[in-house]
Length: 112
Image (cartoon, rainbow, N blue to C red; front, side, top):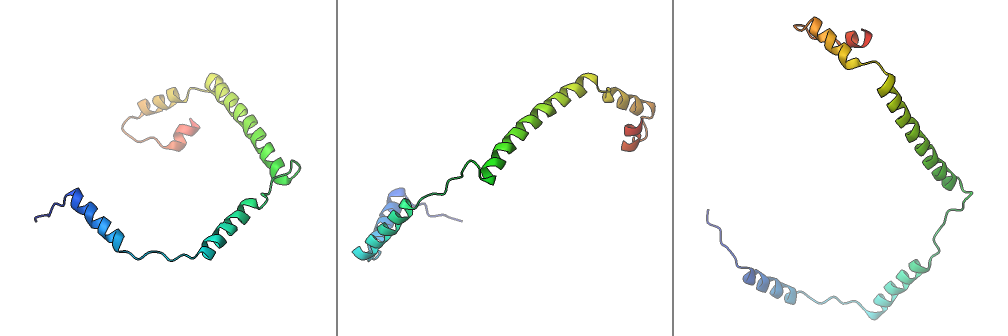
């Protein structure tokens, strides 16, 4: 399979000819003015702002407070379980060493 390699200059010239050959857009001045008027009306339209006593604003405020408190509680529980929890790795290793030829069921690991 032979591919014809085109040079970038030839491609550029082709694209320029295609661009020049296309018909011009016929957009009247009234259409352009109407479009700009519509854009101006959208820009001047007042935006809705949340009042502090609205339910959405109150919910958002409480959501972040509860998320922060939950993160602090989760970090505290993680540290507590790391320091005072049982050493499950040692127990699991003991069960595996007792019967290395058979697979250990998860239920047995949990209840041992």
